[in-house]
Length: 284
Ligand SMILES: [Zn+2]
Image (cartoon, rainbow, N blue to C red; front, side, top):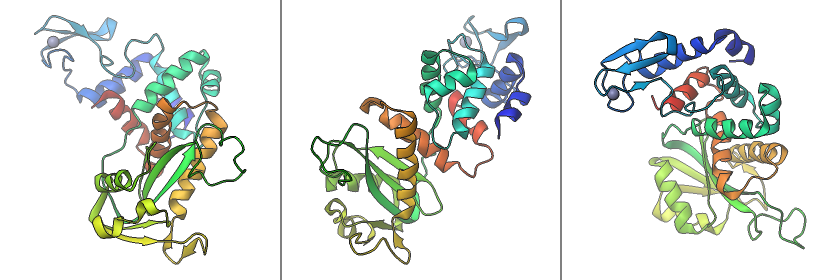
């Protein structure tokens, strides 16, 4: 998927609507208000009249594309630009690329992030778990390069399956209880081995949750397969993106940005990522 191919495939509003209708309805329009499929097309308006509840609707009702004055082509290009931006895309850059104002670009990006959803699949096999700290500045007087634990930055906890997907959650508290509940919810316990560093928050994993191996980073960063390099690679991507593009990520939005980076990471080999995003966007 590249920008030019999206531009060529969707040259008009009509072509965008046709794709959305195909994805959402698979040929049979359904009323978003009463679910009835008894509809009369209103081709001129690109809408349908519901013969059951007498309202009219279009395919974008109830989706991220609803109630905006923006052309769907700009939405589609915006989706493509965000999916392609490995290091993230600032609202300012999106505004320039799409010739919209910065507020519009910010609003579009926030809506598009809503369609960058996790598949819900559990992680299995070798799963690395680690935390990182983003946003804000290190505590005053803190030594440069100080580890995040104990600073005022916001912790993000991540779990990644080797050669698989990542799940990352903003987590202002890092108690053992919280960390283990994240493992229980996201990792297939029966079939997995958890690898972490020696942070004490993870120390209960072995006895209570699943097989657990640790790497002592003061000694070395890898002993054969025992390392957390995969999750650290994801953190590097996330942090470069957040520092480079999203200068002031407020805590309330941080999870959305983390989800955006995770979605791109998890679909890095998925040729259907654009369609998947449309499916998510339409709730189809
Ligand atoms: Zn209806």
